[in-house]
Length: 411
Image 1 (cartoon, rainbow, N blue to C red):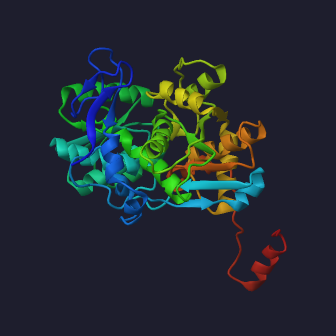
Image 2: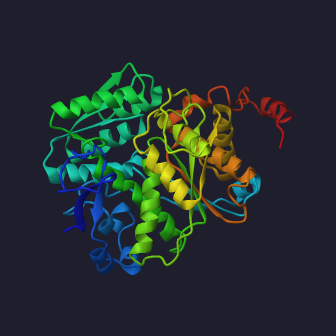
Image 3: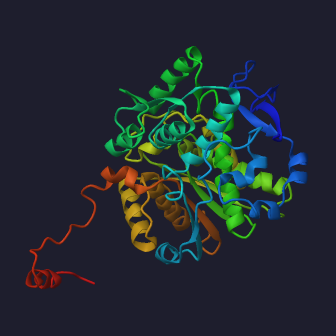
């Protein structure tokens, strides 16, 4: 059995039983999973975690399931890479990349949350799963839902990158492309979820789904030798990933897995959709919705559900937020690729570009440990780089033609 106590409203603290619900019926605040940390402390240890398979379920005591894991057995435990080349380029001394571009079945951190959501959907007895997505979640629900035997309904903005649409269609879900932005897609999905008895992973299953993001934070601490970093920079769409990484750090501290926790948490967004960072910079708790206009479509949520809570984490940890232009995103994707050999999607460009600015502005001390969260593979968003890369050297199939080209190649 698991260690879940139930669901709890994040606003009024009213408690609810474990069920596919997500909103408090009294104050309409969002619900979150609460745990029995005393029982977790007795059941878990560093040694026990280290002896388990290298996937996200190695932290199962901290995850909201009751039985055995049923989905996502090949997800998680992605590399934490010491990025010395990149560190030198941006003026840092101890820089790490948490690389979620690899290992996962669909090459993004969304495979973490979907593993938990679909396992929970099976426990609740659903036969159909659904989601509203800016791309990566669509891929993961389409793929993992197929393997788990679910019927799947995927709702996306019709303006998504062609490569992301194809990457969902290959799994043959029911893909619904909507003429509108993500916020409009999400509103429609809320209406659909109220009428149809489906497991919407980021609506009625959201309290459980969101817990999957904690595994990224657990891995960072384990891979750093069971210690928390001085700084962590997280890309923000809804803001949920940032809040859950911090929750994972605190859970390891509260259950004795780590002894100290002094991490500062930083939010990264594109300037064309930065409601969370704008609130942080303005020193306000009010998230003002915006109409997204950025190449970072996976982060293009103008009215972020967890935006307020993300600002509170940043405030609690004495972190900050930074936004970056589309050109800075492109430049950072290329910088990461040529220094560390990692091809990140646009969200990764946002995170690195924001980190560079945070160091330049003195918000992050360059001699402290820094972890940058890179959440998805660049093969998903190749369109963003069209016209921004170097050109091939076209030659005829002869040595003479090659040597003529060689004269013009520098380096």
